[in-house]
Length: 250
Image (cartoon, rainbow, N blue to C red; front, side, top):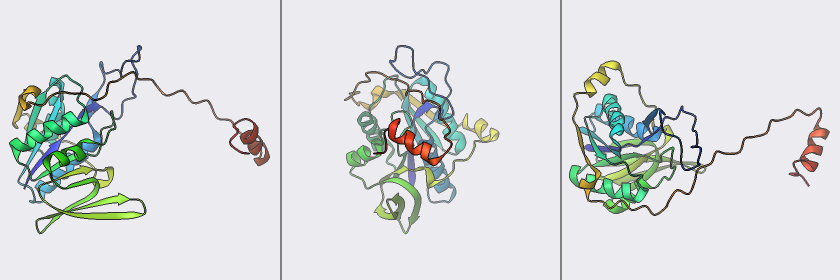
């Protein structure tokens, strides 16, 4: 079984986000970048499937600037076999990304495509669904458990009030949730080995996908600062403040 994992370059989740002075976007200059956490979970699941002998090859792909090669190298250090990098400085809409992945699927012919359920910057949660529709493949979103038994893919999802297990034939598309696994850390020897693994780079235009954005960014603003809390001396005082100051009680 051949796996394809799509990853996205985002601001590292440990970094405190700062808004540009003109409110046009998030400040990215001199900011640490990393793999989107949900995408890293998808890479880890692909590595585990290959280590278990279920998958024979794991390919990672991204669409982004030249600097995104760093995230691909890290995915190779985690255990991916090779990488594809389609270089663009454009901000790609989810539908454009899905169309680009559709073209990559035509080239690679994977049996399973793994993605993070959403990115922590745009937070759209759309690409997996769109890709499955374009490929006309089965889809399972927000996977918390993934198994392959007798040629069938079994995906467990957390739903309101319990768990749901879906069975589907390959090829398929699956998006990863937080509880699917806990990603490993790349060891120094594996980071060195990753430098020798294949990383093919090409302009995004080679995929012949039109970069069409259906939405435009009007502005970015930081959330208002929260006022400090206060202590009250009794329940009666609390109820009085909730009624007359906060006005959340009748």
